[in-house]
Image (cartoon, rainbow, N blue to C red; front, top):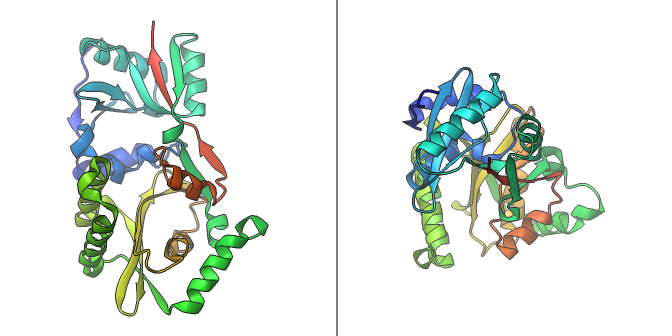
Length: 299
C-alpha cells in the first residue's frame, strides 16, 4: 500500500473539498469548509483525494495524528485501510474523530469488532429544524417568544447581512465581547478569536454568509456560517452585546430566517461541556443531537 501524500488545507481548495462535503449526508459541523480553514492554525489540517474519496487528517494533543471519516463515492474500506497504514507509519493506531452513528454502522459492518467507539458528549452537535428556529411555535418555545417580544417592544432594531463594509464593526464588537468575557485568561476563547478573525478577514473567499443587528446606529450582534452539506447549514459564530436583554434570541431567529430555504436543518455546533451553553442549546429543542464518537482501530 503506497504512502498517502497530504497537503495543508487552504482557501484555494474550497471548490475541490466542498465538491465532496456538500454532496454528502454528513451533518457534522467539522465538515464545514470554513471550520477546516479557520481552525487550521490549531490542528494543522491536511487533505488528499484518493480513488474518489476525500481523506482528512489533523493533529491534536501535541502531535497525536487523527483522521476524519472518509467522504465520497469510492471504496470506504479501502480508504480506511489507507488511513490505517498512514497512521501506523506515524506510530499510532488509527483514530477517527467525529464519527456519527451512521458512520459507526458503516465501520462496524466493514470491520466487525475491529473498532472501539467512545461517545464524546461535549462534542455532540445540536441540529435544529430551520423552521423551528424561525417560527418558534408551540408551548415549548413560549419563553423564547416572550423574550423576543419584550426586546422588540423596547428596541428599534435593524437586521443587515454581513457585507464587506461591516466586517470591521463585527471585529470591534468581538473585541468588546472579549473584554467583557475575559478572553485574555482563557486559552479556548483566545483560539476562538483567531478562528473568528480569520473567518471575517476571508469572509467572501470562504463562502460564508452572515447577519448583523443594529440598535441606534451601533452594531449589537452578529452571526455567520455556511452550508455543511446539501440540507444542513452550519452556524459557526454568534456574538452579541448582552446589555440588550434578549439580543441572542433575536439574533438566532433573525439569522435563521435569512438562511436559504433549501437548508432544512441548522447545525449550531457543540456545547463543549460548558453548562450554560448546554442549557441554552437544549432550550431550543434540537431535532437531532448528533452523537460524535472517537473510533479507535485496535486490531
